[in-house]
Amino acid sequence: MYRDQIEEIVKKIQFLPPFSAAVKKLMEVASDEDCLTSDIAKAISADPAMASNVLNLVNSSFYGFQNKITSINRAVIVLGQKAIKNLAFCFAVFENFKKSKCCFDPEIFWYHSLSSGLIAQHLAKINKYPNPEETFSIALLHDIGFMVLNIIIPERFERFYNKPIYQHTLKEEKEIFGITHAETGALLLEHWNFPESFCTVIRNHHCAEYVDSTNKNLLDIVKLSDILSYIAGRALIDKHPGKNFFRASKSLNISVEELGSIFFNFEKQLYDIVSFFNITAHDPEPNVNDDIFNTISIASSDQLILSWLKIVLNYFGYNTDPIFIFPDDNKISTSNKVLLVDISKLPLSQFKNIADYTRQTDTYLIMFGKNNDYSDIKYPRLPFIFSKKKFNALLKGNFDLVSL
Ligand SMILES: [Fe+2]
Ligand SMILES: [Fe+2]
Image (cartoon, rainbow, N blue to C red; front, top):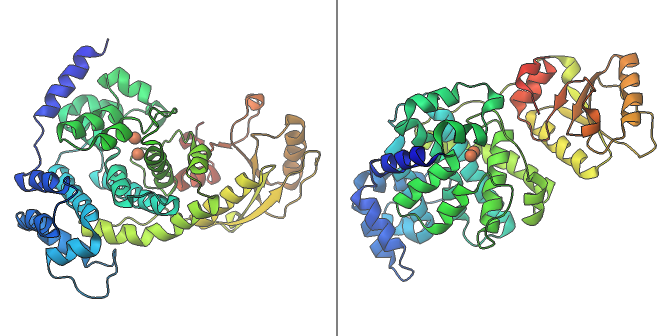
């Protein structure tokens, strides 16, 4: 049914500008395991713009080297061949697309890409993944398919992009383009002769199931970086299914505290790197300016969820007051005016008692998570994965932005 549409897209991808000869040469040289530092330096130096970009970035606070690095040769030595190759790729991709006409704000797109890249690199380091630089590049490119679709079929892409948020689904992408942004990104990277691992991970970054075990960790890192950058408010589209969040972090052996540490560490790097790519730095969304929202009570019968909500809301700038709900505990008490209750494992009868309490005490009750028994219960509800924008919208009583 979608064959004609896919053929059209494949054909149009072939006409997209190729990488410069210098980048192709660099890819060729760097793919040889036994290549010399001087060969890589020579390949980078062949493109003066790429060489000066690499040097500037190496000397930026992003890397934080004490002494100024003045030669590409030295840069290759201190950063390592793989890291420098990946950086050069990133510049090349950015250069290729930076002047494209978009129906969306390209800076938001690059913010999402760069923050996913940085977060992926942190995740890779925590997971002791052998090649963190590779994860930076793959995560940076994971949504490049959106950019490609926007360039090659602009009218159809604009139609998709202007749809309401709840219609921004992979199913809708298939309907309109015949192909998803994930598949399109993989096609582009195949066209550019990127390694198989890049293409496979990008093609599957929204798949619920693991398709092959070779790239399992890489895929989990990219999925998780995508979700975390969405929570951090750096999403192109303010909607994320958030599936497999705990499964991915568990399989990578990364604790919620470690995930939280990434939130607090990557912002500074993000500002450094976006300014380097000449992207205007956007401040994160401000807090809702009302004293009653200063401290949020969070209640759950799951210690992991409590820890996670505490980390996320603290990161958003709110204080939290965690309450563990015991199975038979029908009473809850809080002096705060907002109560977020995790309903995923909470029996309805217990919830009804909590709801009575919030009515009597004039506390704003928000349900969190999913539970099919609650389909008739009408309280504001937050999905499992939410951004600060969504959370604030809910505090302000704007329920249009919040859907499960
Ligand atoms: Fe995506
Ligand atoms: Fe994404």
